[in-house]
Image (tube, rainbow, N blue to C red; front, side, top):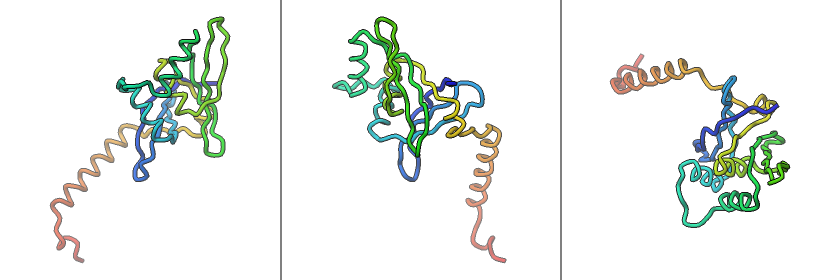
Length: 165
């Protein structure tokens, strides 16, 4: 069974500076699936999300244009599995006769094309069960932020004598 996902965006994980593609369930538990991707792919997705024009077509732009030029359409992307630390995806292309062909793809490439073609992104339920992360409830995040702010105020006003026993 596949579950519709929304592209949250591309983030950089600190301290490694590794780009991560974030997909979140549109419904249900709203679990997020983080997928490590390469820098060029992160840049390509970010350009498409922001609508930033480039002087020359990037690879994903070229591929999307070629698919359309051949009378086909990208119909969907499905992130299918996680095998030995590697994510896999499938790109579905429908030809003019209505036949759908499915191609194996890296999730980063498939998502870069999905953004350009404005098609839905899905993930297999089993993959979400395995790799999905449940978000912290908003209340806990607010409480943590309040505790951090209280600690900052304390440290701003503290002096070394406060710590002598």
